[in-house]
Length: 430
Image 1 (cartoon, one colour):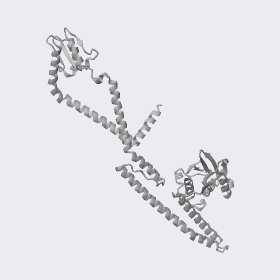
Image 2: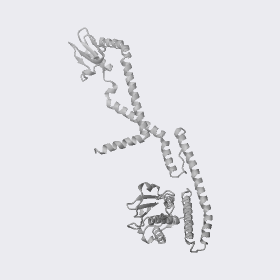
Image 3: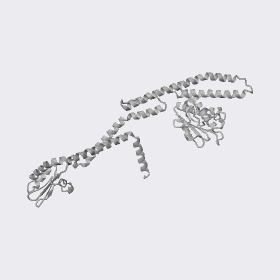
Image 4: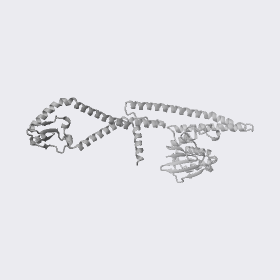
């Protein structure tokens, strides 16, 4: 528990510093307390200086009248009637009468100790009569007054918090909107709840998001157009290369040219597919798909597919998926695992299991893995861990990006982690 308290305090301080609402409420409460303290101190100072001199003759005259009403010698009955009528305390001490209206009151509570002879008189027969404040209305039930005051303070604090929360509610909308725009979801703008500075900020962010959406759509349209237009001359170039005479002198150059043209064709196809999937209007051709059978079909088509270790759940019900795109996803993941498993102690492992209402596909290799700083960039377009882009590694950095797009188009996710050894890529399909 001794270790938990500092941790809890640090956590609370972090939340307090992070919460603008909590800091504003704290400032309001401290300001209210400071203003109350300054006001009370000022009033006390004013009453203790100028008002004391002004009130002294009035109080002295009133005390003389009270002493005359009690009589000389002092009459206890008259003193009792006076205490019953007025919120006063009376103490009589002398040779003949010794009486106290509040015997339980301490000596310190009598006002003659602080006011000198203001509230004290000595009669002709030697009795001393001292006056003080009696039992005031709020002193009869101090607990009730205290609880009422505390309740009012809490009520004011809650009201201030509710007002500040309402005042800063657009910040929650702006934060949620920024997160949506960061994910590329521009279909839902930030709601404009007010017409103050925060409302103007939300409007400006909506305008910025609209402009960004237009720029991204224009970029995507240009890329699609260029990719589509490049297909025709690329197809003609490949056809012309295949029609070249297969002589021994030009066989190596012809094979290299065809390989480059095939790589360009695959690149353009991946670009077109990734941009189609990135579009908010991406259309999936869904149909019931047996994932276990699909995985086996893909492995059978791969040159080294027989080396892959399978852990498949056979009784998975068919799921509504786009067969062609999920096949592309599985093929790219296995290609990546086989490529980086050369020389590894174990072959790649593919597992297919159900997790609640979702299906998890995980492909793991047992190679060297990648640096931890590069993990978050592996699903970015054209990103490769080898900066030299050697042909031996294959691809141009679109495979993982395309896999992520396929998973997201199906409402799922793709995550990458170092499995030590090797790299594990997990796809969750809802």
